[in-house]
Length: 254
Image 1 (cartoon, helix red, strand yellow):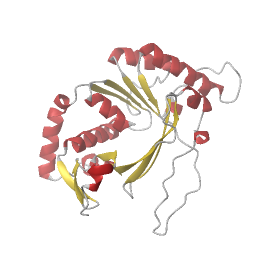
Image 2 (cartoon, helix red, strand yellow):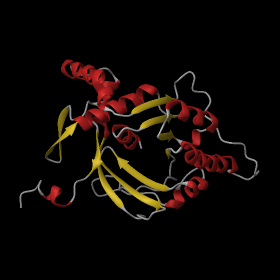
Image 3 (cartoon, one colour):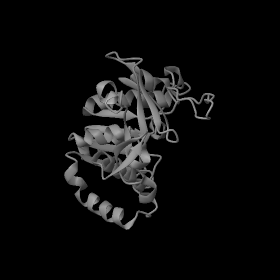
Image 4 (tube, helix red, strand yellow):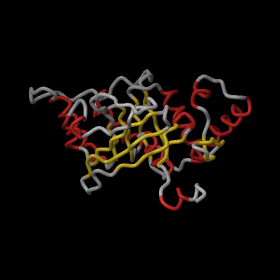
């Protein structure tokens, strides 16, 4: 979701991120590493191919970049605003003034930042609306329905992140976890979020394998069942779809 939000900003959108689980510096590090990977401040060998890559997230996070890369990071940060036509505003869990996480506050932030795209990470950490239905899960359901109305009223695209129910893992002969997209019925916390969503995008990633799957479990304009495999090496800013067709074939000597 963060990769999609960054992509929107690079196309000129104003992006508002409500990070209710991660701190500001962690989000900032991921944004910088992703942007530097898109630019290709360095290269990394992946499956025998040299690919554009970014700063090492762990080294940035712990202040352990080599002097050469530290200088490059400072220059990159100094020019980053010139590289993004849009804006990215982050409200993070460790912000002292981020105590109100209601939809009313979200709307105020949308209007203040003139946001086109909103990321709620995760949805279930919002301050839920009052449960007037007196039914189990009614507060989350009421919040989801009002969030849908808010998206329409403010003309924003909202990524509401939630989890899937955990299932038993399967592993191959090498001990690698089998990647599997969750099903629609596995959406956690509230089924109303599934009902209100325009798209349900399922993701499963494993950074140890450097792989991930992304697929569409619900699409009001079709596309359900479409699945793509992605390279997933976020620690150096590589999160992208695998090349297919002639582009992929050109990498091999037939």
